[in-house]
Picture 1 (tube, rainbow, N blue to C red):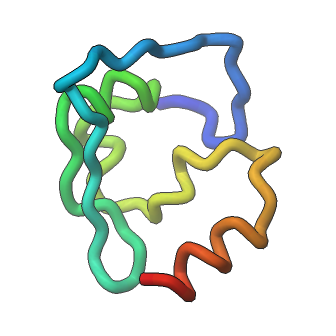
Picture 2: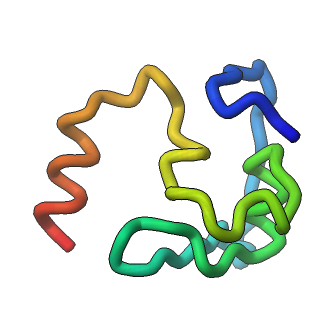
Length: 73
């Protein structure tokens, strides 16, 4: 299992036409992740389904960005 707080130097290039897609329930838990999202996340598909979406959040992302996101959606 990946360390949730880990920061990697890995950069993922997503080709045009191959979007990274995830879906959550109303509580923010991941209920769907396509293969592109799985590959970029560093987690297996099984590890991603069920935890909160912030499992893939970069620790330097400001809390305000997510507050704005949740207020918007």
